[in-house]
Image 1 (cartoon, one colour):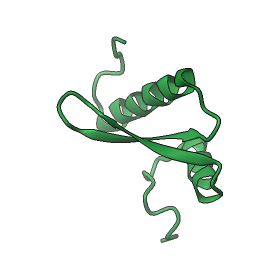
Image 2 (tube, one colour):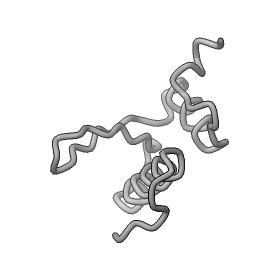
Image 3 (cartoon, helix red, strand yellow):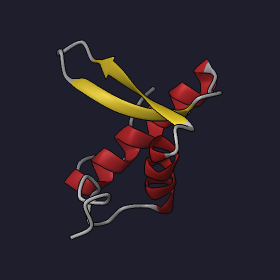
Length: 77
């Protein structure tokens, strides 16, 4: 019922909570990544993130998404 946590999945990870806290304190930003099928995916990275950090954040996003939807856990990058 917490308004700050309502955007999070019920099976949230510690990393997701830390990302939301960093966003609230202005230490992180949201980068919207548009896929080829026009789906826009919000990815949270720190203000000092490099391209490799963004790549890892995208991988984490899709891995968590696959686990939560019960899909394949192997993604070919």
